[in-house]
Length: 63
Image (tube, helix red, strand yellow):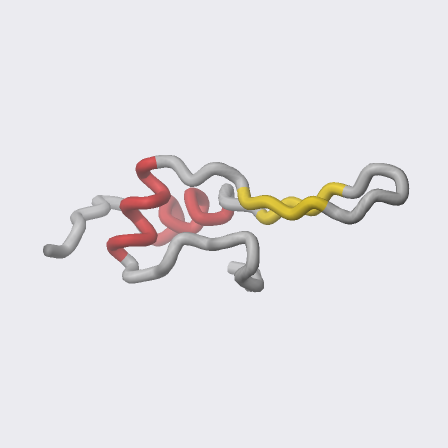
């Protein structure tokens, strides 16, 4: 079943750009990687576009 996202391409890109990959290093400790939380609207959009949710180990490309 296809998900109806009801969004313009500009709104969709704005929502997806809010998903960010983070890397934090404190002093000499190993860096800690993470991905920002994905809200329900972003999850629906990713599903509608048949895209996987980003993971910590996946290399992210720029939109």
